[in-house]
Image 1 (cartoon, rainbow, N blue to C red):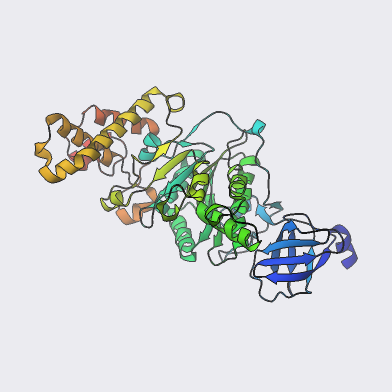
Image 2: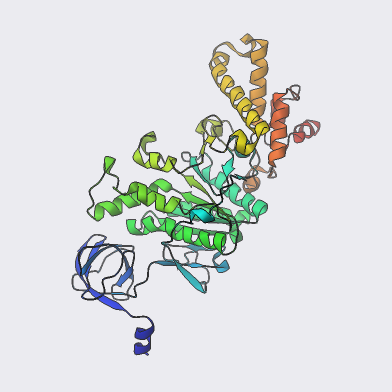
Length: 468
């Protein structure tokens, strides 16, 4: 039986010559393994090492994807010449995985027919769609002022407790409803508490069967955290390329991917570049980001949480992440404290899609008018705080009333928060959202109180709210 196994799947053996933390050097007398080959070591072959460089004709240097306790010089290492693989197929929906494709949700193990390499090339330019399309989320504030690109990448900036997870959960819910799509959540360097909470929330919201979750937790070695993004993308690509479905890919947090790369680079002994980042920062990030694209088969639309180190937007990690994004959604703690959810800072957020050629003349003009109104209201806030609303001119007073109604109209009850707020969730079409904004700017509802516009769906609900 051993001979048959050897024939169908030849095993190449080598010996460990040094172990320095997560970095392992291995000597192979014959057949030097290629870059990205997975090596196995330890008593039960439980330690996984990925080859990252070939030192000479007989030695390779790899990074361990699992803890290296128990490894010693002279130990045997085996490889079948294959790369790290993850399972793909319909069976993975509703499950939670680690970077090796093992389920970590304590349910029955899955059996799938196909496992794919996590290192895949980006789609060819000839297969990518050149048409700019809007990705409709059903969330008024985003669809009107920060339209997302189908197959594009949006950055979600915000601290703790301002509603990032709620916003992501709502987008997953609406993705299932709108596009019959699949959602993929990828947690890079997540705390285990966050992963557990998100899993429970998705289960309660009833969207778990349409999504896949993958986590590389904070306590895992940098090698595993560095590869979890590519592993999740491989699963997402299956649904796009094989099943022709739209995929919403949520990455939390892209900075921790860069951070893991920095750790790996430092361990491998590479000379650091500016501020201690790896010299290959741009290449590492591009290899991941370029795979997220809109093709003839379907689209992977990505929303990525981005941590900005020390709020410094000139930090190399932030600069390189920004260059890949087509939209920026900034969440504001001040808005959250006022109860204006989703707490999106409408003046700081922007999108490359907000041009007349893509969203149309009417939508573009409305966006500009709304931003001008909100911007002028922001300027007048100091005067109102010192002197009161009565001291403003009639024109300014009307503008303030319009802006306050607009702010409240752009709040929205979410399906995922129904059990907490007691307000039924609303999914608003782009047409209804634009109509509502247009009618508020035309002063059609200046006799209605501001509270009528808070947490409603379409604008007609404001009148119904007053009647009831």
